[in-house]
Length: 277
Image 1: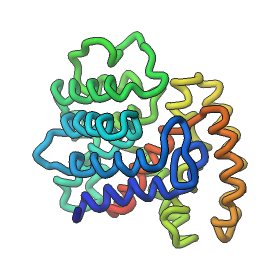
Image 2: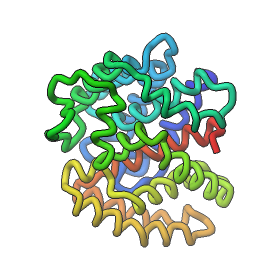
Image 3: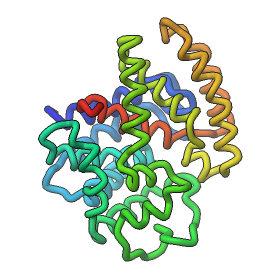
Image 4: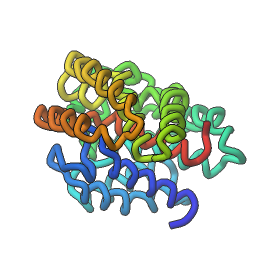
């Protein structure tokens, strides 16, 4: 793999290498999944996501189908939903700085067939706690564009929010956090941990909210704040391993996976690597 595909794959692997409490990685399995599942998933979806002959919806749907065939579980729906539009826009960019201007119009222009492919992908992946909603439920037949569907979900789902606001949290918070901690520690993977904890401390995680409700998601957010503060105090982030592993154990014993914060972190990392600042 070369160019953009290599950047995408490296982001998946950096995510696996980073010690993100509550998430699966080289530091430990969890939630019925292991590190090997995520590595295999990265291998099968990267060429699909970077196949310029496919439309955006088809890239997302084919990635989910390939993931399920390879590992028989949903390891990456959120990451795929966030990364696919980034890749599609970058295939058309003259300069990285144009991303902010192009991403929202690109998503708003997606037609109903693209939407159908994305809805099918979500149904197939069946993310934990998907449940039912009154308006634009992906479990029911839909004939709308993806922007309208995401706009209806933006108050309860951070990925949907990125689709409607032009990736504001990713660009304004995630990239800046990665840049600050990368400059400070000279380590992308430890900067990834800081970015992940920043998201966890800033927002109730959508995945947790779907499975356990807003109150539990808010409790996790509040619990993360002192962990982030303590982690940020270390001159050598590797010295924080025990602190992070204790939090990891607490979350996994409660079967809590801040998956959406991990998805946002991967999207932030990709844009950071691609030079969006």
